[in-house]
Length: 475
Image 1 (spheres, rainbow, N blue to C red):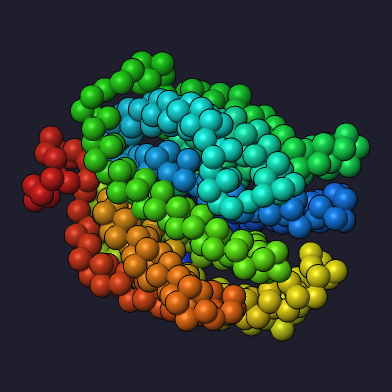
Image 2 (cartoon, rainbow, N blue to C red; image 1 turned 90 degrees about the vertical axis):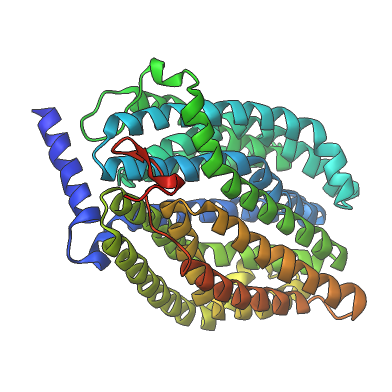
């Protein structure tokens, strides 16, 4: 009976993705848990920053905030390969499920978990060893250097559980289950917030308390999602231990699809690390303004990111089902949805942005003024970022991961970073010109992304009917 109920639920999910005439409703139903999950993550980052602002010695607040926020791209660089595997694996599983080839999807899931585990182990060791050198290269000194090295080294141990969770999340998202990853994210984030507060407030662990809180949150959900991955289910993709043996053909197909997404993520994160280094040279006021503004903006951008992730599932499954027109219609619907949400969010937050920023920067007037100005630019540019997120989801779902690499690289490395360097080192302009460089790069990336979209082939990237469709064989 339970198996029948699970199967019925799965069929309803499949109908939303493959058949439902109301795509707006279908996309929102599946995107809402992702949006809430991403919102909780962004809120969690704000909480860590708030704790650093209120629980540390006032003389060390700025150093504490810098230690928690500036290393963000380091973790993203370390996660790049796993995110590439997750992107490719989710696209392959979605296309197999659309073609009703669940056993093949199960094989991909097992290989994905294995690859993410091995990648996490490697990155754990690498980040731990290079942290002191990396922080010195960033130009960080004094107490901020001590805090940042300690914070990075503790959090390096979250790589294995985090990367394994990427594999689980890709497996569930590919089948249209966005609720379970959301629930686990809530458990992880609530654990992080509670433990961080206890570690910093009552155990006086300072910035290390924030790092241990995050690590504990990532570790505590591991037994839960591993159990769910191995539990036999009619509704979801489940794996067995035999799926964890390396299969060369599948491994290389995963790698071929994943390396562009991995490199795109790594280049993006490296670009932001360079930007953070440049911004750090402007002084603590600019650092605070940039980091607080980005954290708030991340929360507002969450709906667009959720819709972008779901777009990949809709595109992937419909391509697998050979329903190309519906895949393209899903992209158009997602574009309209994200832009409406972005305009509403901008209109709601723009008038009260100063009051929100004061929660974090009330005692630093210069940082507050810069952050208020920065927020104007990023809020008015939200529609551009919404389009960007949907385009990236489209490339991922269709298997055009090379387009992700081109778009992400061009946005930062060809436009934003050269503009920032030009404004700072050549024209000697003030720090606020960073905001101008960002809005210009967002405009240019949307234009380029639209051009790349016209080149998307919307063809299967997995073996269907015994043919390697992704290699150019007609469906």
